[in-house]
Length: 398
Image (cartoon, rainbow, N blue to C red; front, top):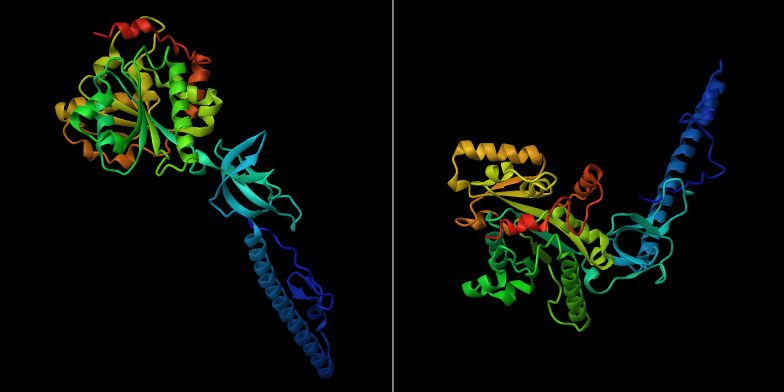
């Protein structure tokens, strides 16, 4: 919000009432001489009014010029990444200079208004390092966007991940993968000659259980290791050390809710990373059967959960289903998630029909889904989700 200015009216300027000089109200007279005098009063009053307006215009120009000088003295500009001392230093972005808070005296401003990465908008009262300072390392670019790839067994998640990593997009991603139920992505990429070093910064294969169950701590450790590695490379001045994102491929039986909740509960992960979006791959051939499959009472319907948490749904294998079945599948998806965009695709035949820029770094994650789940089901058990059991995985291992 721009700073308001209180204009000081010169004492020789006539007082104003309803926008007219007061002297104009006394023009009535019965003589020509008196009428001439009144005209002179009117002319003088109008002249004074014009002089007042000219004075104000010059004052505005002087104020704008002085304001430019004051802003030029500030260390940061709009768009700069900084850290602000708010119960410890928190990173954010400058959104306004010479900020004026509604309700303050008109002449009162502070150097900066800042949008913190955590979502809050604050202001910095002074331009000193103990209050606001330049941010270093990973956060100089911003939090690392994390894309969660989910979908039921055989839907096409690994095919999608391969496509993202093979594409010549000039981006660099870290990959965290759960090997449970699917082939390891690093082996597949090496076999296909996809250029692992050019597209992936690191691969962490989590191969001793379900990502959303016993591997929650391993997920945090994997992300922390990625953060430490990138920070170390940035500190040593390694060229192109920064990451463009982290890709997490969950198992086919994973409920994405606890995975997302993990990011909020670990301070280091929450500081350096943000969930960019949940991409759910839906098997157009089998989704209706998967959705309707009988389950023990109290267990999670994983396909429904995966679609419910989705920020974007990739409806895969549309080439292999009839128009009627495709329509029914879309209707079923909409019954679970009414707002997420649905992209119809055939990843095995035409993966490039879905541009990579529409999949990653899309800033689409809706955190209210977590709040909705908690209000409906109670606090999520991060160890096992809501009724999510290891036995349910074992039944699909073969």
